[in-house]
Image 1 (tube, rainbow, N blue to C red):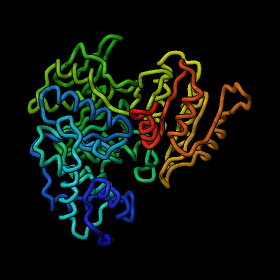
Image 2: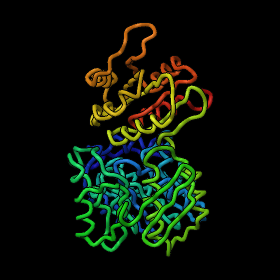
Image 3: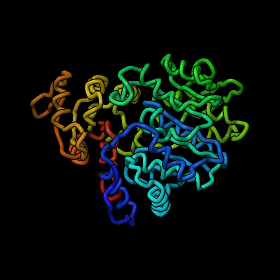
Image 4: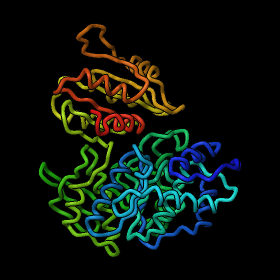
Length: 437
């Protein structure tokens, strides 16, 4: 399907608006169209490429790799997604977001070469950002996979090291209903003769079998690398090196040592071409930042932002909330896409939250606040209809309105956890911008 002729956009927002409505499908699995345009654009990297896939933990692992490598003095190109407030967050060069002008030039390059090949928003922007990173001549490039692995647009690139962080049930309509099916899709980023790191302590047999079948050099957590630690510090042990007396990652949460270990395994595999010293690793981990991943904001009441939108991530969020100590009441601002396992998410968190502020989201495929309320009631969450109610469920049309309500009701020793879709967290981030609470 070809696009209708339209004026060439001149601003980044105009480009994004055009791309959002151009292709007939939001998600159109397959690499053939992307590969054709990639070849026309002559996208290739003359530096090591690290690719990161997984159900959860991709963003954290990418951020740790970037932070460590920047501390070691390397020019690091990074592609991450989705963004919270600005599309530019998706492309980083040496630690800085790409400018509008850089992105527009990359979009124009893709548009000039695609001919009559129709690309989704994700495919078009992925090609543009990979073109931008390739032309910027970085020392190392880190690419985060969007959905799955095997058929994701990022997978038109051959990575020198491929990382799969975790495998759990998500995007079942595209990836399959079981961990075995999903593990096979994630393993699609592995390459023959190249290092393939799996940070999941219980990897599906399908992932191991695919790595062995194609002749990838598979590094498994617990077999080829591991970690140990106490309250003060931790240590990484790999195939041929140890890193001791490490600072805990500044990213909070129960699974961050799994993510950090997978990142260090990738760096161990690349140590001949990208040597990194002990101090750079310590400093990189201690200073890494990533919005929206169990991000605890300063002030009272305590506000936590977490893009937990599937049961695996919700279980981790529940564990992290338990580890925080006592708070009289916990308020939730929760919004979700309709295709997520909403009941599974609620199941992990219903006993951790006293007051639910559920919200609509500005996408047709989002669950409505009423649907979320019905799911909570179905899960046995019983609101109390009295002035000093200890449990409540209220519905809102926007994340900002839901957050404002939670803020107006929470005491200074309470906490507010904003979670679910990226759009939920982004809506609250927008509401909290300078000049607003």
